[in-house]
Length: 320
Length: 289
Image (cartoon, rainbow over all chains, first blue to last red; front, side, top):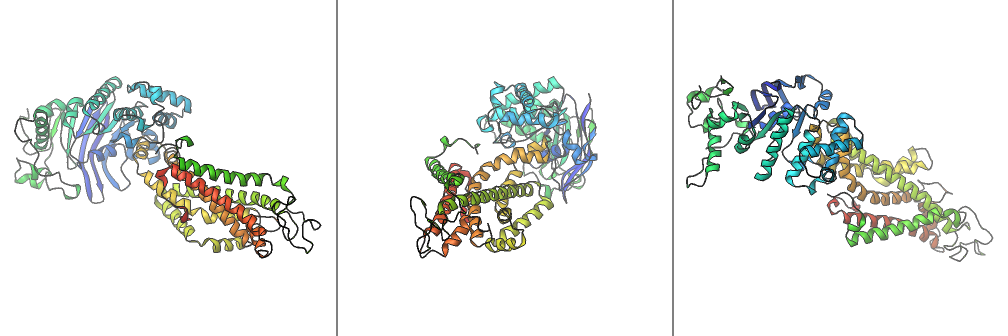
């Protein structure tokens, strides 16, 4: 399969604050990669770096290619027409991302007017089609409604319609279902899987919810304190996590699902480090039950086998 | 914030204020429009327009608001002055609001050097003592009917600029602006399509206050002899003329003052009503003018 996103040795910093360090990963066409990590681990920064949407103060080193385009090698004015066409972005909060004073149809139509130069009526017709594609019932009626008249799930669908309007080869979704109830979340995930299978696009799905990962992803990338600590196929990572942090994440999730047997829930001891005070060596070592002296000194070289990668001196389980 | 809706959804106080204000402004406006049928503002009727002692006449059927010291009909002059004062005031109000909104939007949205430059300029505009600066500008600018328009615009644009700047700044960080950037929309299009609609109610409620202040300012300038030159009547210069006759013919002073009062009161009532109809927009008071 074609590689849609290629990130090589990406380091992102704000002055002396290093948010991401040496990230390398790929997303292929027809694949959903889940990006997992705690708050502050750099998930959103990575997504924004791929779309070249980081705030002006950020320094970016390394190489990012999206569908063969090196976005950082071209002038900013040349990147703008590619957004929306090359990358569809679903932001975290659908309510905030929709303009409260414009009907949703007008906001979807805008994409067609901006990128394809359609007339207002043509763009409107296409917007109604786009809304129908994300399975919004009565799209021509919903198109005329304002965001506050829609339910959370409908808003999320409208945002998705906007992001997918131009059939981009890459969809980046930043925790889009976090604010939704489980049932609606399930519907949205099923919809994304279906649309993805139909179009063969690549999806980068940011989440901290292992349940979403299990339901949606083909592959998983685990970020901790700005480092990529594990990468591999979803089923393998969930059944046999190699990094102690991934292991802890999976265990927390299992406890939540199985829960209520009188045993205390498992929680990872300590707190995730803030970007300003990241520990030396492997950043997970202060919270890691398997740590030894060398973990404190140097970040481990990534181990690769098969389709998997782990950055740990003492990986869990059988690496065969 | 809902889009501006028809008045039927507004609270009763808001509708009442707008209706009364609208009626006042409308009445004054009608009189101004009918000016050519109310008599010649320049015709000096020495035979029947003055008392045997040569003094102005009080109200009578022939001259509903009396005559002035030169035997001219006060109603005709006040009506004609209404055309002059209202057109100057409203033109200046529209121009200053448009200029201020443009400056505030650009400064608030694009940021950087443009923001620093435009907002320091705005600070200078806000620091000007209006009357004094108005007189100074009168001396600097060429005379003509557009001079008071230019002066009022220069003196007034900074207030809406500040207001719109603050609001735009708030909008710049909103999710839908970021989402539009992520969808590849051009900056200027985001400003016009996404930010401007949010400023609509603010602009709408500010506009009548700005117009009231502009009409007032035109009267001030003309009263001081810096606005519309005589013999063209304006409410300001009529008040100035009438002041000298206050002791023996108070109607010369009271008639234009009443027109001015009704106009500003009407505009402020409209503004008050609009403010009540959009309770989210009470971020300023007319005292700030």
